[in-house]
Length: 253
Image 1: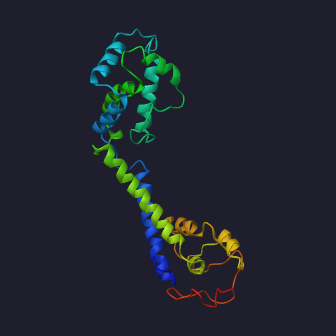
Image 2 (image 1 turned 180 degrees about the vertical axis):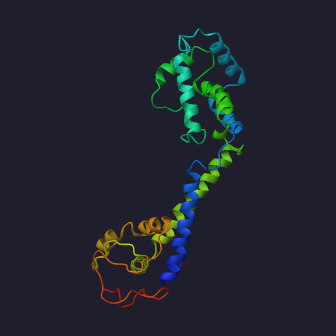
Image 3 (image 1 turned 135 degrees about the horizontal axis):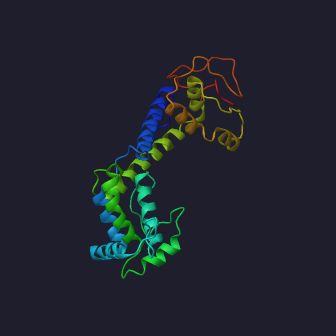
């Protein structure tokens, strides 16, 4: 990337970083595009390591199991609690896609006892219980699912969005300090501006400036009519938008 020497060039990079972060935040929200119930089922079934016959075996066992006065299974109570808790994580936006490895832990549930109980069903594991619960979740909360049928593509697209946000911020972070100072003055963003002669100290003092400017722009803040400084204030006017200042005397050592 060519060296940025003007505030107007820095504004372009700032706008790109803001757009990328907003795109990334949209993928973290309730409004994000979600996996379909079909995709969840396919992904969890692969993790379970068995076929639909084992799910049917668990369904039959739960149907035959005696219930207590509150309707809870006598022999598979912890299995049902675990499966319901995992379904709620999907519904409440806490679990976005099937992962890898053993079935996830979940707060408020005795994982070990659930795991012990489910193993009384030949071939079953906790993923089996999640599979069965997905059927109920689809009936009672269809909004928990979306239109995406390909879990692999879903993960790849999310990672692309994350990469774009990270790369856009990295490009903006590379803007020279002098230009960041002018841009911060223009936007009324305060931060320490010690004119230290030692590069290492200057970089420490400027750490996080790019992120702070992005945060400010994310809030929709307009450039301030009367910006001011915390430290290092100059009596001279700030550089005009688009003025080349890198290597100039105004902010020089």
